[in-house]
Length: 277
Image 1 (cartoon, rainbow, N blue to C red):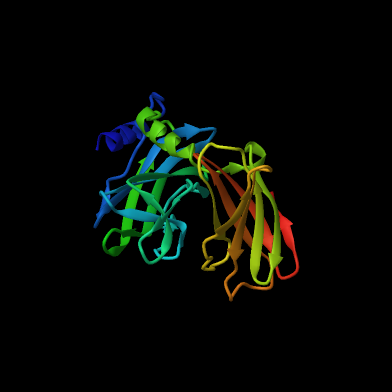
Image 2 (cartoon, one colour):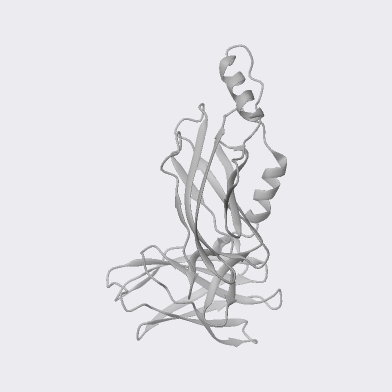
């Protein structure tokens, strides 16, 4: 209420004073095993730095954009927002989780999906409204619905605590291959499968590869084939689903090495593989 009161005051006397108001966060939206909200860190070069924060109870998990062998992919709907031109959702790299039946790509405990929100009019307040469908699982799996909204004025003061919270997970978002010390070096297609060759540094933790698609496809998880320690080369196999189209589809791959990750995208068609990086 304090933030909204200060916002109203700032709007009412804007011709007299340009004192900042507080940045905002929504109320929590609760479900079994989890709760979610949207948070704001402040404005940066005309864009709002924000995040979707999910807190999970002990032994509960939620899913990455490609959930893997089991799970529910999150669906994010910002259509009820006002003064929002675009929302860039950034996905920290997930972890594999085997439940005894299938392997999924998950987040545990606490996750923030960083957002960069571009307003239609930078001089006006942003109302960010998120309707979110997502899955949470423990011994049982629950299809969850979260609804969150916040109002942020362009004069809102930065919130250092929220900015730090968002920034901590921004560090886990994959970077472009130009900014990484390791990368995918090549992809070939053989008999409905992609053979992926990556070069990674020695040490620094476990190597893994995750994939997601621009099309509504159920992509199987990648499989690591072999490692050449002498050349620091790791090879993976990506099986393509039977309904994979002949026309080009963009597949993005997140290559993880320890706490670092790089994302690279390729156009895959029946006859060609085009590096989009």
